Image (cartoon, rainbow, N blue to C red; front, top):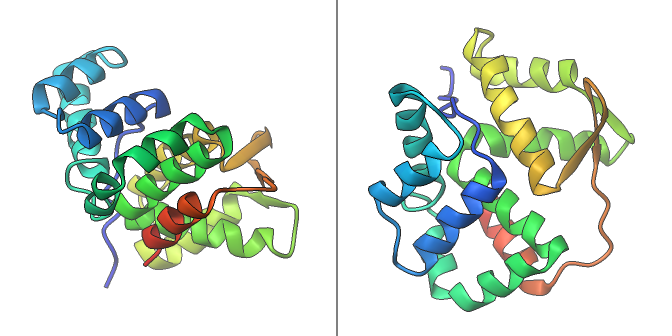
Length: 181
């Protein structure tokens, strides 16, 4: 049985961060998310897809109760460049199993090699999710979000490297670990 990919729209990290902050402050609403989507997208269908993704990344995210409970620590972490990347990656991975699988697969290979190529990740994802048009589309959503979040870098097309960071706070590491539970 194949798993559900779920993600079909890339959300810029700046918009995700604004949506996350609104959710932490109890100010998240569909109207606000639509306004955010309209700053990036045109067309009713694109905006609806973006709204759905933003809701899943924030309001409907299983990690959100923990983040809301620790809202001040999350806000402080978002102001720290290193922690920000970890928090945002955690939000993405906890909302979408596909993003979690991509991140886990890449992490596994980064332990033994410096670079990972797109075709390797795509082959591993195809084994779990099936190989159809939605797989590369989903990868084209998730990988740019992880790059923009600062977890991975793309030195050239088709090649990815881990963004090596020396120090994260204990709180950011806890959020990241919870995203993978």
